[in-house]
Every structure is written in C-alpha cells, then in structure tokens.
Image (cartoon, helix red, strand yellow):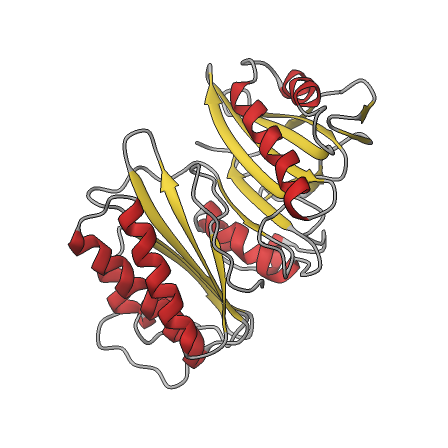
Length: 342
C-alpha cells in the first residue's frame, strides 16, 4: 500500500486518502484526518466523534493484530447528502467467524476482532470479509442521519507507492435507464496521468445517453488535449440480461460469479490519440453474474472461486479483496465491481 496521501474530495468516486498502518502514530493520523473529513461533510459534533471512534478502532486493530495493514478514508456524495467511508485491508491473520468477533464482549487473543463491536455501534453500514491465513477487509460507512441506499457499484483506486495522485480512475452513471461504468488508466503516472483520467471522467458524465461504443468515441474526442488513456465502458442491461462493452487499450473486464468466467474484448488504442473504429460487444449475463473491471495495475490472476462466500458481500468489499491480493505496488491500480442484478 502507499504511504499517507491526502486528496481533496470532489466526487462520490473520489479516490480519498490511503494510510499505511505500521506504527503507533498511524492511529492518531487517521483519526485526525477522519475528523477533518467529517467536518468537511458537515457532520454535527456527535457524528464527527463517531467517525473518529471508528477510524481510531480500525487503525489500532491493524497496528496490534494485522499484517500489512492499510486504510482508505474517502467521502461519499449523493444528491442531497454526504457521508464518510473507511475501508480497512490487511493480509492476515484473518478470522474464521467475523460476525462472532463483532459481538460486544467477544475478545480474541491476537486477532482483529477486538473493537469490532464499537465500530458496529457507530456505523451506518458495515460489511466485511475474512479468511484465516488470507486477511480481512472491512468497509464502514457513516452517514449524518439515515444512510443512503447501497450503491449498485463499488470500486477503489490506489496510487503507485510514492505518488500523491493516481492515473487510474472510475466513474458510474445512470442515464436514460442505462447503468454504465467507466474505467480509465491515464498513460504513465503522476499528475499528467491523473489529468487524463480526470478528463475521461468529466467527459463520461456529460456524454450522450448512448451505448458504450458511442460513449468511448465521445471520450476519445474530449481527451485530445491530454496525454491519453486506456478506457473501457460497460453497460449492464438487466432487462435483457446483456452486458455491452467497448474499450481502447489495456483495461481488463471479466464476467464471473455465474458459474463461468469470460474475458471482455478491448481493442488496441489510446483514447485521445490513437484508435481504430471503436467496436461494441454484447455478452450474456447469467443469474448471479458479476462484472469486474480493473486497470493493468491489478494482475489478472485472481479467481472468485478462491474466496468462498465473497460473492454474497457488497461490491466494494469484493473490489477491496481483489485489490489486496492482485494489486501491483509498482503501478496505479483501480478495481470496480458491479452485480448484474440491480
């Protein structure tokens, strides 16, 4: 994971701040950053304190009981409300029964379960996945009042170690009944790569309500002033059980979770600079299917079958688990997960 990186929140999909949790001072840094973000989201004093408790408990647990711990802090923005999300990731030791560990009064020697009861009491929404020997992912959302409905997609972005911004990014939108997802990987690293992906995301949100191929064409025209990016756009049509997909460059798309694992076709090219005619491909979506899209900062070696029970968890927990085990530390990384069923 990267070092401490603070990024000013701008959108619901903002990449947020990653903290590498490896020393006693990390918990204080996370707590202070969480309090600052909660105030920026205009939480009242009581909910600011709740956010601080969750941040401190998550970080302290990682320091005391986990290997290779990292924590992501980011804003959640909806039309009329803003929340805070904290995602804790570690590589072990893991827990056999996460639900039991979250009960008040349950104490374990040398495991991450300690403190989960306090986290659950403050959280508006809590989801987690843990396997002995593999590690734990916890996703905690805190809203000022009633929580917003669960998001239909979930993803994470992590910068290359040592960088303050990521050239990878994603966005989701619903327009004219279409559920669409974008993943972008700006060429190279650092601010110029991030600027290319920011242009792709901006163009995606203003693109016409059209199929993925037309949206990619729109992105290509809008990004000519940038260094360019690999991009892919997916559209999930639940009514017809069809996924439509168009991409330029090295973005991986896969349909899994329905008893099969099918890779999705992207054509060679660089959005903004070099392209063939953009083609759109249709794929069937079986019952229980899951779309996973990621940049080349995530190795294409993961298999959902290696994670019993993970399919039943939220998209962001699935994405975080894939990022933990398949993410490449020498590159920016982005993972997005979307269940076929709304």
